[in-house]
Length: 404
Ligand code: PMP
Image 1 (cartoon, rainbow, N blue to C red):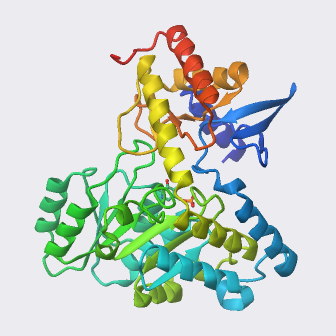
Image 2: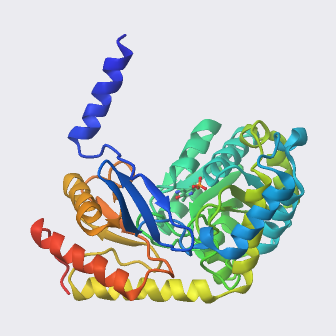
């Protein structure tokens, strides 16, 4: 086989469909969030980032940076091994305690990313629990889907956020089979929120465990940043709460929180946990500082929610269509892969506004969009600039407008 020709022709297909991914070459400006320097062949440009998952700007928070710097000073750069073989640093232990406390669980287990925490946990449960059936929401993240596939256990996909469909599928399954319902709180591309209480009620009725991915909610919802389940007083109804340290907490890594027995089981059997180098201690220390900060400070959460409301009302005033949802994610709908990419390119090149286009397969075809994520640090002027630019481009692209 001519491998090179194969790779090139596959990539050509992506180009033709307008969904070839081009990464913006950015350098985040410390102390100047959400600004970044963009490097192009013409030189350097200051851009405003409108699609960061550092939702609250904690990646540049002074206490987080100080914790990371001082930990590098006294622990060095890397962890030096897997968790089992010399890599467990005191900061990993502190972080796991902090996370268990955040979600009101007995224990926590950290992984190198949220992706791995989903993949390793669901994969291990599905492989090891004899006869387990995993009921997975149709819009679950790729990391959950891949974990369930890897497990090779029985999986049942239920219609997104559809309780009737979930119940019908639970009722149709063997009543004696062990079951697990896997779902998210805030869905990352549409920004809708799942009916956690009702799903837990169904889980109780059918004797299922619950697995909730709160990756897009931890740090941002709930009085201590414990996520939507904390806000709704439901943390104790969930068997496993999974989250990331890489979005609102501003650092990197993933985790689960659950009973001590369950965490110990995953710790002992999950290859994605066992056979990989532990997170650098400085990352763990930065995460501890970030979680502690957001457990007590409401300032970032309130400012964030206010910015989201302001952006939405400005978009409405200009008739720019955006998907209504109860979260902080503002999907501005384009509905065409090439136009979506064109708008994103012009925003970057002509307006110094960076919003990555979101195309298939991340979202279904004809629902291509700009996924805009305001942060507490976007100013009124930033919002005016973004909405003004979108307004111009909507006219140039002859795109449908929302009925204002
Ligand atoms: N779950 C969901 C719902 C996600 O959107 C993502 C990443 N975008 C992940 C898990 C993976 O988290 P991480 O980026 O920490 O790997």
